[in-house]
Image 1 (cartoon, rainbow, N blue to C red):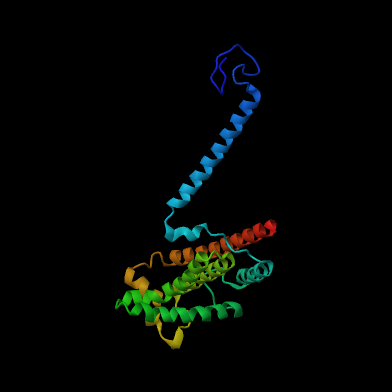
Image 2 (image 1 turned 60 degrees about the horizontal axis):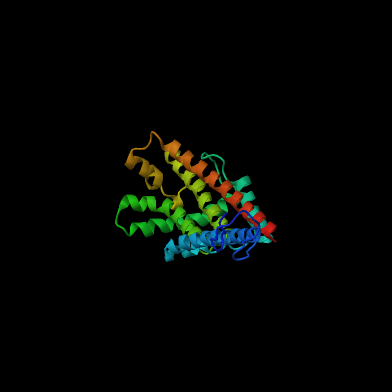
Length: 239
């Protein structure tokens, strides 16, 4: 056999007659060294992968802020109110008190959207801008909380965003029926989605589009709460 340390060739034995090394102990030492090198290679690979992430996306490596129990309870209460009082269909006769309050807040951003997108000088974009701004503002808020790695704030923004999906879906469906009162008592010629469906000739799928918005809104609300719940439980288990 050949000694693994000094490479001296000798008959089979437990120790080297040339350098005196004990083969079993030396092999254990080699095994430990190999394992240490493998671990270092893995860490080096992770480091190289991290280094490849552009610096402008380095915030993605930052840890999320914890979701406290009081915050979780409050946000869950808001989700519960949406689940109970928000419309389950695009055909409604009147807003509930809770839904009406939320709708009036969103209406401010809706009207501001007409002004904001009207600055581009395109009439169709100005008409669409009301509903678009309802979705854009909460999405910007969500992006801000996501950047700050704040799950509670991001969940709240998602609730607001997908609640607006439901609000817009009702307005879309009303383009055919014209039952909702318009701000300032304006007539049907001022109905955003009636004008948009006329412009793009979408009356064959107007109710399908409005229902899609409704379903996306409810799916988003439920998924956002599940994400919040799992985050809270994970933080709770970490202590």
